[in-house]
Amino acid sequence: MISFKDFYSCGVITAISVPCMLTHYTHKTYTHRNLSLYVNNILDIAQSVGYEVWYLGNNGGKCIGGCDRNIAHKILYPTDSFDGVMLPDIQHIIQNAQKRQKHIFIIAHQYGS
Image (cartoon, rainbow, N blue to C red; front, top):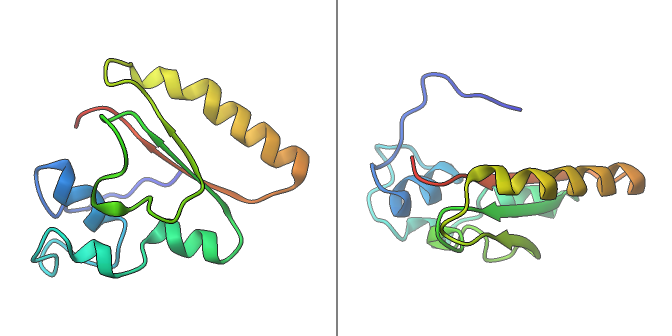
């Protein structure tokens, strides 16, 4: 688990904050909400260096801003789900990766802010 302190969001809505957060942009340089469509994000980079990347979305659908556009492993949950619904899937993903000695990178997008 990585926790970032002194972190600034690019915006107050998911459509701006999530795509920006996963790229090299900062809250000052993310000047247009579609900038993330034209650069690789952390999911793309992790996948390109051999990680099995998973996007688990519990915030009403796919990853906004196309951040999951190249990712093969996605699980999207119904909009009325509590975040705990992701835990069995995360456990299963980790156990399978350990059996196969595979490196994994998981993004668990929780509901709301």
